[in-house]
Length: 482
Image 1: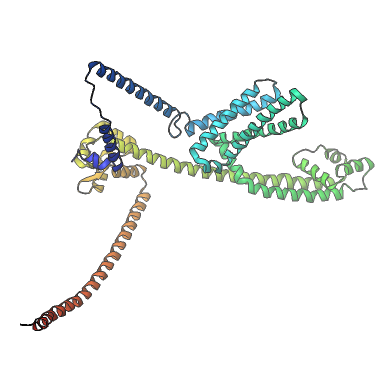
Image 2 (image 1 turned 90 degrees about the horizontal axis):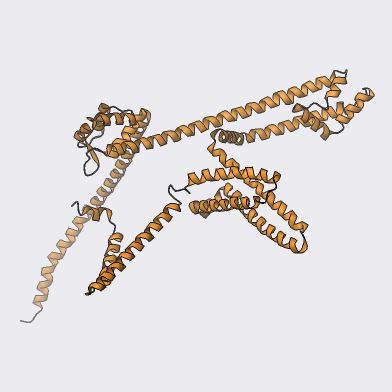
């Protein structure tokens, strides 16, 4: 039975059919060995050469598969590729600034090298995510835009150089090249992708994203406040005739219109009092200092404090949300890791044919001091607690190793609430199964009742048929001639 188990348990009909076909093909192409020793040695040499070439081809294909593996842990795996592209993005941001200040002919080839890396990265991303998943990510659209404009720039620069040799450098092509080079600055936007690896910067970006709505309405409030004070200052100080000539000219020049008054007050709100300082220093009237103090209290103190409080509140909320998500992810990861390590650790004991643990095997396994220490290190559970868990789970003296590892992981977390919730879920599932069984029993009972009700009618019909059969036979017999 053990020898037949691999064939029946692990081999599929497709594998069996393919093996049968290979065997049939070998029988169909079979030829007897040559009778001559020279011919036999020559054919053996050919077979060895073919075998070595096939092995070399398989080794080469294996090496290429390992190098170009897009799904596994090769150099172009998503994590390593993301780290490499982060380094490329930072390097590109540095070269963009250096290219503007340093005149060097090699920047052209540096840009082409970076463009090639962007193309390779986009190709691999499209290969992994598919075309639809690739275009659903907005950052991939930035990459496509950068690559497209860079390729167009390369073509336009080549055309410009060719035309410049013959007709001189046209201004139109120069302007087009300048516009295309501005698109190259889009690569700087990709530096925000690097922030995902730097958790403080990433949290700050999330905070600003969450605070955009509140900041927008705060800006609306500030604009309304500035406009209202601009009207007041324009009416009271931009059109004032009661001051002396010097102060009048300075005041009118400062608040000569509503938009300029708006701008001056905005500068004052940001601690730039260069225009209003001479007026405040030279006036003897109490109205100007009073209006200035009211504006500073309203715009600078109250409004800016509200903005700071809003951003701080959003920062704390985002921080708490990130903390909860990190804890949940860490808990899920740690539980999965503990369960996998525990299942691998328990797999070293003597299991049954169905990967089940027995009490003698568990007791013998825990008698080893190293195994006990390893168990306590993995899930903070002592040997007697593991025995108690086994006795609670055992059915006919056996427990599956995966089930035992799962329960030991739950015990390691010391979370009794989740254990009770799991029991309640299992009880609800059992209740649903029992309800389905009851419904099926009722249906079967109604079917049997209908069948038993129809059975007597069939018996009566069959009895009448048997009683009328001899009479018909007698009538047929009496009609014959003697």
